[in-house]
Amino acid sequence: MIKQLITDFFNAIEKNEYKNNKNAKAVFWANELQEVGYNDENYISERKAKRYYEKYVEEKEGVSVSLPNSYQRDFMANYLNYEDYEDYVNKHTSSNKKSSKKNNTFDDNVGDTSSKGKVKKQKSIIVVGIIIIVPFLFIYRESFLDSGNCFIWKKDHYKKTSCTTENSINNNAFSININSFKKVTLTKDMEFFSDGKPNFWYGNNTKGKREFFTARGVHPETLKELDPITPYILEVEGFSIESKNAVNN
Image (cartoon, rainbow, N blue to C red; front, side):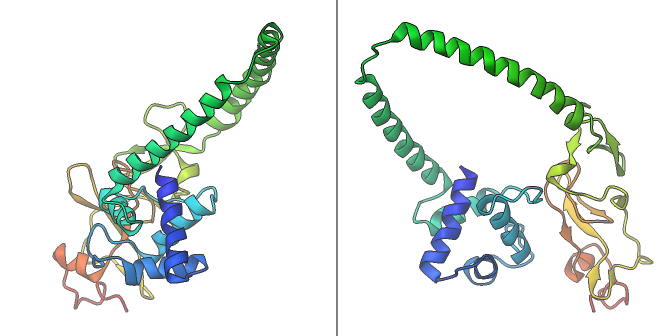
């Protein structure tokens, strides 16, 4: 239902605001439509808006983006003239049920003139399906689950592991460079920015404590996308924004 919501949302922007491409829709959402500021946890950046479009509308593979939170889901539903996301889901679910019931009524009225033949045919299809699926599952397990494209969190870094390992994370969904990704404690001697670009990212753990990392990715506990540091965040952490390392030139 999240995919349908986001797709409907972008389609509505195109229809209502005459925004005909991905960039225009993302910029409109981030800079004109939303009602929260940059430092609000519910803020949607242009980059994240584009990723939502790529993942759910264009259905691109390997796009790393966290699911919209409850505020963001309600916001999109409101734009589509629903009270909130729950109202959107309920009305779409009700519509789908009515359509399904109508189709079932039509099917019940169709006579079954060769029930024995159909049963035999169905059994044949099941057998063939099993013959095809079993080897496929074996190949899938050998080539994907044990491919080493998964990792697990170890204290302050990710470590490669089999995808069958408990609590392992499939990196196909996030595309994290685990060689440069590490949790750190910020100090005043660190170079927070290089040529105006942040060198650290942050996110809250399951206890709500802000933690910092050396590369983009997701927080190992919550799997939520990390945000780049800003002078404001550094000031909150006790670093002077007048410091040459804390100024985003």
